[in-house]
Length: 169
Picture 1 (cartoon, rainbow, N blue to C red):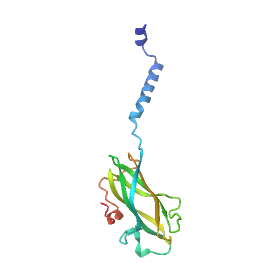
Picture 2 (cartoon, rainbow, N blue to C red):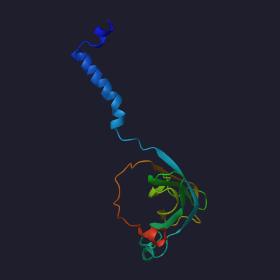
Picture 3 (cartoon, rainbow, N blue to C red):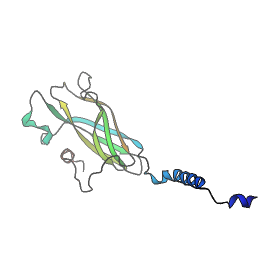
């Protein structure tokens, strides 16, 4: 009886069902792995006006309206053994009275890929002119991914001008 059950030819319906079941089981192997988010620690954070030599500082164009250039810099630590990619920095930037400077926005910029260990970073912020200082910051965080989530920059790309001026190489 066992021989008659295991050696019968499969019907077309059974063959389709078996094929679909195998495809469903194999589909996770064919898809790229998910990009899990990674939280990184941020330390030694500073917020200062951009260097006067920075093109975005526009010292010759300063006027009561417009925006001033500020640099948020610090050290981000990746405790893992693999780079964290497409890393964004989040912070609450406050004026002297404790009011948010960047309304409805806590993502202050992207620092790209973070290799394992400690890395310096710097971001340029456009702060409305006339904002009462000194500026303060709170809740500075960095978050990236285990795999790329957007198109990649070329391998030969250089540091941005602000990063070069702050000597983050």
